[in-house]
Image (tube, rainbow, N blue to C red):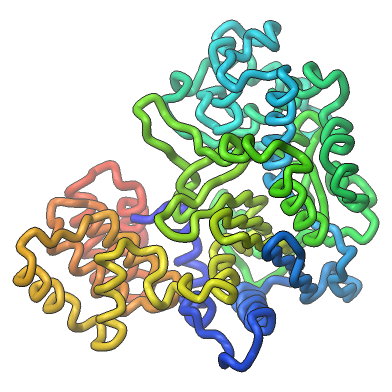
Amino acid sequence: MKNHRLSFWLRTVGAAFILLLSGVLPSQAQSATDSVDVVVRQAMRQLRIPGLQLAVVRHGRVIKLGNYGLGNVQDSVPVATQTCFFLNSITKAFVGVAAMQLVEAGKLDLAAPMGRYLPELPATWHAVTVRQLLTHTSGLPDIMPDDALVTENNEKEAWARVQAQPLDFPAGQQFAYNQTNYLLLGHLIDKLSGQPFAQFIRQRQLEVVGMPRTTSGDAHDVLPHGARGYTYTQYIDGQRRRSAQLQNLFEVFPPSLRTAAGMSSTAEEVARWLIALQQGRLLQPASLPTLWTPGRLNDGSQRGFGGKLTGYALGWPTVDRPEHRAVAPVGGGRSAVFLYPDDDLAIVVLTNLQGANPERFVDALAACYLPDMRVADGFGLPPTLRALHRTLRQHGFSQLEEEVKRARRRNPAYVLPETAVNAWGYSLVEQGQLTDALAVFQLNTRLYPASANTYDSLAETYAALGNKKLATQHYTRALQLNPKNRTAADYLKQP
């Protein structure tokens, strides 16, 4: 079973990433930047993205800017270098930098309880630390539960309501992304800096870098050269559905929540901000490891959004893996910034489509500059699985079980972990190779027959292939093994 975002993608986009994520690139005679254009245009075509803006940073300088499609579909206005896009939750990365600036100034202690700085908060909130706010491990109730809309008209009421609620869980026990954390960080910046947080960020970051087009606001504001927002998602009878019809997206970020999602910018200006950050113009170089270290739960583990976003640092989601790790702010399901610290590479992708989720294809763009990142070659898999993947690419996935038996004969200690095999299967799904993924999930059910998760993943893939009979069979088994499996239960209720 994969996280709910991939499940939704499976049901809607299906196998659209076949060429994109399989690493099919132009001939070697073409440059990396030409390859980037191919990957971007494939993604835009397959995901029906109206407009996209790109910046690539390599070795401390912007080496590519790209503008694709329409920023305003109604008036056929093309995306240009000066087109501004909403950053949504990428704003939180700027807040993380602001917090570290206050740490460097001796005004803020990440380990300190919030009650030290904001004693007016409810007493049950006082022990939550600053770091727990930044990393979404606070347990505070969410001011926007189930994405409930908060506007300028009801933000005082919403703030009063959320303060009256109990903690969702003890601080540090879980990762739970919520906007209350960053609303409080806005109050904290206001108090410790002596100025409104938007002014503090402008003065200490935007003006230092030179980012005149980067602003704070929402759809109520007239944004010069602003891209319009769009979506294919509709809610019909409370059910989320993807339609063929492009619709306008009206995004509201009331002032108190603009530390959570309030900034707009261009790919070029965000790229310059990344360069300044790495060159020590915004923070001391010694502060970057703290900024980019994911939060830990009380049991020492780390959590993130799921998929490749395995952790959450100080406003920065993290991609923790043996090769080509990244810090990766994402926003609104529409934009992503991936910085690869060990590779001196960063990629900024801003779009105007909610649901584009460019974090899925940014690694494919990075592979244009770092060829060993090609997913088709098994990038991201543990060494044992990567070797197996490469063998099967030559001989076919029909040989999977025989290859595993052969490996076990050579090495009786040969083990394929359930979670790693499951992730491998979903990697193939994301490449559009559903039949190969099926072979992997079938193997996992045989390796781990008592696991509900293995049957759930197999059933989900059968469903994506349109085989309702076998999907039903394996969802039934998954539900027998785990009666709390809502995905299986919901599928089996369908006529």
